[in-house]
Length: 89
Image 1 (cartoon, one colour):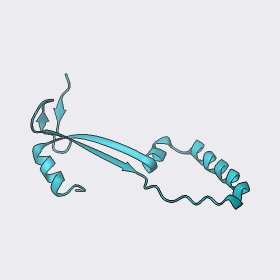
Image 2: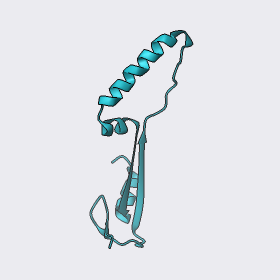
Image 3: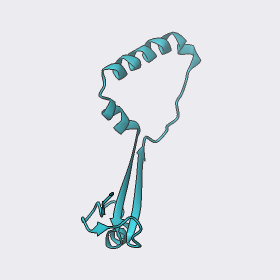
Image 4: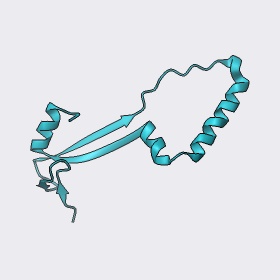
């Protein structure tokens, strides 16, 4: 049996509780303009190799945190109201 509780205050909730709300949060890198200069084609390969080498030795969780992360929370009605008034806490 799945037990639900408010992820903010801990209040017990049920699956079909009218006081249970789902909050989704997505955090991702803002895509900036990438300027590709065709005059530097020789340097591009070396730069790409350097990036790939950094990725091989990097922590996968840290890479994910820098690019995209999503969260899902169950909250009660009281916490939902507080989140709507001040979403970032």
